[in-house]
Image (cartoon, rainbow, N blue to C red):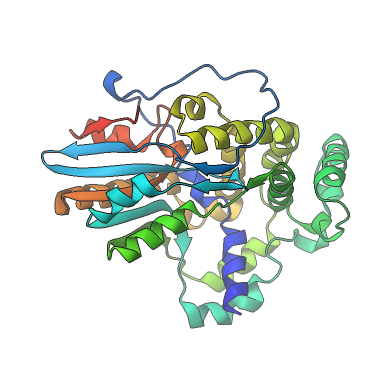
Length: 343
């Protein structure tokens, strides 16, 4: 039952981890500018790398003799890639703390969660048994059928999913067929390294408090989300985005920061994140107000605390938080920290 509960929470807050990655922020000072290259209009077919790979280098944030090493996570990664963790292992071993990636989560407690299970069942389904064909334009549905046949095959149950969840399942099916794994467990490997070296693991997740979780869940189940944009952007850019992800996965595996920074597909992520935050329910629920800004501010507070308390900290951020004008480290540089990018 606990696994089912966790799955339901994941489905309902699927988009929260990406929310912190797309927030517009003031551009950093010129010395903090990461590598940026004009995005290519078309990306050639790419063979996904295999075997043992080093991954990217680390960013260095420092003030005085206190330093924070920042490692950029990325997903999806090549299914047959083995990550060489030797460089990271040395840095983690001599650190006092590892900061896990930011995001948001609803915490209701194990036993309270069990009592909420009946309310959670069916959260990914459309209200009133509606089908995708009833909710999306005819041309979008025709496109959906073509891509569904290509990547998923026969699955009548998915036709009753909310568009945002149907789009996510389609994307994951496409990744799998193209040799990419949504989770290559690099984060898990770093967690093991920290545990083996008795280094403290510190979550940076923003915990959201709901006044009445049961009511919120019931309202969510009967409220249609504003997720048409997420659905159509996924369909329109699926094949292109998968190829882009293959290029980025190779770039991450080989430690090529310039290639990682070059290709951008944040429009799909932002549209899917907005499907939750722009819903009528989210707009009237205090826990979801200014969520992007709060996720970012929460990470900043914890990063500064670790930098002050530790001579060496190792932090994990998604690669989207480390490249581009809205990168998290620009906020630290604006506060007087020295930021050095990997070469």
